[in-house]
Amino acid sequence: MNKNKVIQVEELTKMFGDFAAVNAITFNVEKGEIFGFLGANGAGKTTAMKMLIGISKPTSGKAAVAGYDVFTNAEDIKKSIGYMSQKFALYDDLTVKENITFFGGIYGLSRKQIKEKSKVLIEELGLENVANKLVGALPLGWKQKLSFSVALLHDPKIVFLDEPTGGVDPITRRQFWEMIYKAAHNGTTVFVTTHYMDEAEYCDRVSIMVNGKIEALNTPKKLKEYFKVDNMNDVFLKLARE
Amino acid sequence: MLPIIFVLPLLQLVILSNAATFEVKNIKFGYVDNDRTTTSRALTEKFTASTYFNVLTNFTSLNKASAAMLKGEIDVVLEIPNHFERDLQKEKYNNLGVTINAIDGAAAGVENVYITQIIQRFNQNLKVNLVQIPDQQIQPINIKTIPLFWYNETLNYKTFMVPGILVLLVTMITLFLSGMNIVREKEIGTLEQINVTPIKKSQFIVGKLFPFWVIGIGLLTIGLILAKVIFNIPMIGSLLLMYLYTSIYIFVVLGIGLFISNFTETQQQAMFISWFFVVVFILMSGLFTPIESMPKWAQLITEFNPIKYFVEVMRMVMLKGSGFLDILPQLLKTALYAFVINGLAVWSYKKTN
Image (cartoon, rainbow over all chains, first blue to last red; front, top):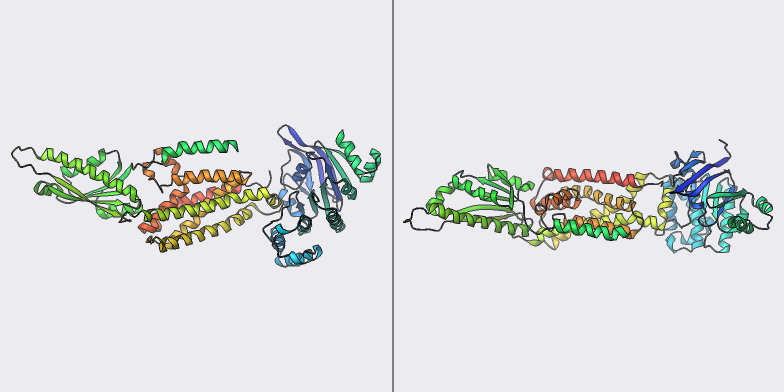
């Protein structure tokens, strides 16, 4: 197994009855890469991602994440990854600090580590004034940034982001992507799905899923050249219309 | 959702109408025959012949009969005194001692009426048998029963109901809390987040159960205090035993709640199903209507009703002063139940779909 390939997927398939939600997709993601996982609604992005993070059993194919097989070692994968879902998934009825402590505890961080990390995290996000407030009371943009930081709490090898910037204002989106760059710079691989094509431009490589299949996979630059268009939006439209 | 809306109420209609009967039947009857004569045997046969009484046990002494009543093996003890036949022929009257388990005051009243009726019919038969010599002056023969209501001497309705209602409250609150809980996390999306973490299934379940367990024990404590302060319900047995049993019992209820929430997608579904079980459990618990009066198949269903055991234990310990060995069968069954249902809850909670 190639050490630099932190995600290796081969012919991965998920069937719901007769319907192939994910139809034999094959791709690799390199260490430290920002990998954009694009596709229209219902194209199978979330299903594919759920298989990779070990909460959905694939029907067939092969996949290894952080060196662990998704069929046999799903629980080991979970130790090595962070995940931020479409829905905001921290506990609204816990405070910022309590959420950090709770998730830190689940990932087996020591009390001392949790204390240090939450201090740094709260400072970086500028949440000092609301650290003891319930998370439910925070604006969505703040919640999303907090959610991302919590997903990175245990220094995962890979972080999976499922439409992390949905419903967030442009400034916060910008800040969010700065956080993503920083994480990638520190060696964390970022696997991100999005609907915003300007965000796709920020990725090192993107794949575009249409009807359960990956129809294109390359750097944004190469994709634009190939389809002879100026931006990712047009690349997406060309593929999705076919 | 559609099957839940229609199938569950129909099931309740069929099961509960049959099972939750207010009739008092299958009374567990024991007697002590100190006389051992034709007349005394004729009297006990009257009870054998009655359809309301079954499980006729002949005890050699009143002490043994009392012990059986404490364990709940019999509901009624009839004591036929020595020289019953002789006194009857001489004096033309006699008194019989009847002891009735009166924890369920209403049932005890009905049982007393049945016994009185049987004795009266027996009186009339005796008249016919004894009054054969035409010129003998006809004297009415009169056997009377003197009922003793045990465990609840005044047939106080509250003594009977308060422990039972306390059982219901502890059960309902803990069941609904646990039943709603995981489903709520499914709805919010936090469960998916938890499933992506390396947390162990058992850790998760224990973490979910423990707070509700504490709440259940707290409820019991408040309830017991109120029962004493407001209703002056006696607490004859050991409080420690009460808590020991309850602490195991709550695990059963929590396990059922978790099991339900593993199989439902919304809080609404979980609520519906929890209610279904609560209603069946309550009406088949022996709290309002005696289990002995239910048809055999319904009695079999009650074996799977945790509330039944809790009501039994609560009444036994609080009102009868039963000890550890007396409630051991209930304790063991409840522990087994807790083990199985929580095993199922852990098994049915899947981090990977």
